[in-house]
Image (cartoon, rainbow, N blue to C red; front, side):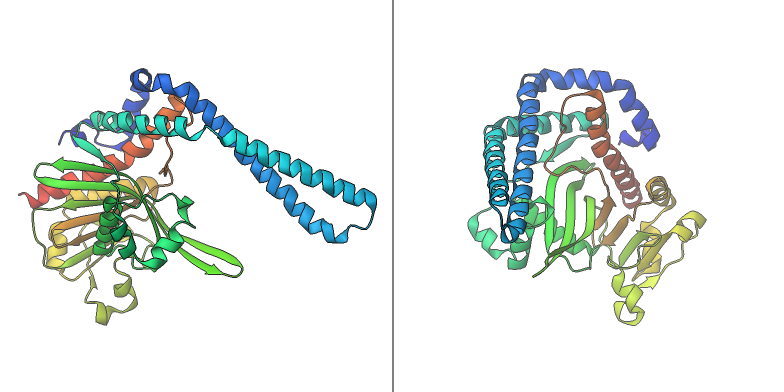
Length: 371
């Protein structure tokens, strides 16, 4: 894989992107230029719509809070004017919103068609942007009721129910990387790569736990970022979990930290100071753990963690390596507000930098298991 040779670290990729952003933008405008004006205008109208409706709701709230206390004619006139203004604002909001959906949909669809192959080309890797396909009603009915009900009330309520979504959620469960209770998940952009004969699959993922009560919803954000799974050329007999310093509850080896005796997992000390002191390793097979975590892999993982200090989680189970990479830059259902160098560069980096580190780790694992 040439990616690691071309971009040995994050700084090299950032410098390359900054140097070529003018070329990137010119190439993107060829396909997106005709759609940009209508898209920007639709975004502005949508923002105005949200502002008008929000202000209308605020005024209605004031009206309802004051109506019981009014005793004078002037007071009723004031509240009457208030509610008229609220109605006008609401109508304006609806009118602003009309006609905004289609330009945004067209631009977003075309942007995704263009930008992801563009990023794959930068990284010099053959990849595919995987689309959600329609799920049959019978499949939807099989989904847990709790997931279905809470999903629309959390993470924007924009999840696409698809076969790909169902597969990602099942693989997440297989990874055992999140053992905390959760009932709301979202899967957005997905990517598929072939590294030799092994498949690497990456998806944008958000996981929440939503608790309902009479006082409203309580939402706990468990994870937001990238979830990756890589097929390794070996069927492992044990289970090995890795997580960064400070992340010892709620994930793959939670049972280990809470109950050593029943979990069958044990701490493995690795002979590499930086890794040993800053990253936790729990495994059912210490010998196998040392095999699946060679020095090159540990160095790549340490470099990624040391630059971000995020709580990365990795597991090795059977013939797969699973990875959770937190990221605050994942844009669920969004592209860029406009085609400017700053916006496009920011978006490209939000995708290419996590992919670079995932590709580094997958390449290290591939080399180890294909010896």
